Amino acid sequence: MIVANKGSLWRNRLFVLLWCGTILSALADSAFFLVLSWFIVDVTGSETMLGTTLISMSIPRLLFMLIGGVVADRWSRKWIMFSSILARGFILSAFGLSLLWGNEGWLPFSAYAVAIFFGTVDAFFWPARSSVLPFLVNRDQLAPANSMMEISQQISMVLGPLVSALLIRSSHYPLMFFILALAFFAGAVFIFALRLQQAASDKGLQTTASSRSYFKDLFSGIRFTFSVPILSIIFCTSLFTNMTFSGPINMGLPLLVKSLGWDGSAYSSLSITLGIGTIAGGIITGLLNGFRGRFLLLPFFLAIMGLAVSSLYFMQHLSLGFAAMATIGLMLSITNIPFITYIQTIVPSAMLGRVMSLLSLMSLGLGPVSYAICSFVLEHRLATPAVIMLIGGIGLAFISMSLWVFRTVRQMEQHPAWARTEKVPESHSLSS
Image (tube, rainbow, N blue to C red):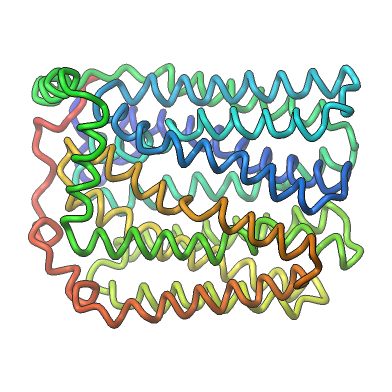
């Protein structure tokens, strides 16, 4: 099957299968994160354990993310994605069984083990998924295709919390993890149904790469990335954005909800609102062709997201929380999709897996540091969850606005590969 023509995105069987597999695995991912966070807060009430569990999930991602990019450039992306999704299903099934057998006494070690294994297999999924899309659609379809993939991710952020909210009401945690495992297994079926055969030129690249060491390929990808100034700026921005966003939101929000006397359904509702905002942002970005020609607005949108995070400091009623989370979600999509499309366009296909894995690493890079700092601050009562979100949001807004200082950012749309409008060559197509 040749890459679909313009206007026939949903007639591309490979894209549809990828989209369905992604939305199911993302649904399980979203719900798992919420259920695990609430499980720890509800059962142990420990801010430290919540932070260390999130750190345990992030560190393996850091250790294996770049290797995952090399693997994605060398081997079948289909089998990498399939194995990762399937493994996550087995991990949650095992954790559900341990809880069913009444082994909550194994906490926190069982939670740490689940987080470590989950983070490890997840590290190999995203470089493969992020780098396969340019092989499925034409270059001029990358923006709408990325929008649809982002929408699938965010639909899961709506449905995931909705499902988790219903399950949390039952207080039957083993059942929750079994259902999430089934969602992963269903997603793996769609990925398994892909029948991909890479073009001869790409096979040749993989054969040549297999004769080199993983570390040589790894460092060649790093050297390439930081030899391109705009990639360096985008990746460093992603690194510091994550530092100011992940810890305050992922730790501060559930603890703030708990301190306000609200239950798990309130936390899930706020997460659903975030998902609705990201879906709206994905639709808007797709309709506007990924904000092509308007990239100077992206730092401004990112700053708005930071201010929305800070506004959670003032949350005393859910209405303010809903407005803030919807704004955060909207700005997430509006900034993420254009940058991802830009990277997929200007980076050579032979390097794309490694570059996307480095982007994922940067977006997660300071996550453990952020979690550790937030955990320390909260445990020692140096600041409240609301104050942490206030400071994190202000930091994010400052970093975003500083992007306008760089001429490379102001001129990023003048890159020759971005300016070209021709389609992806047939040599980059996939057969089915």
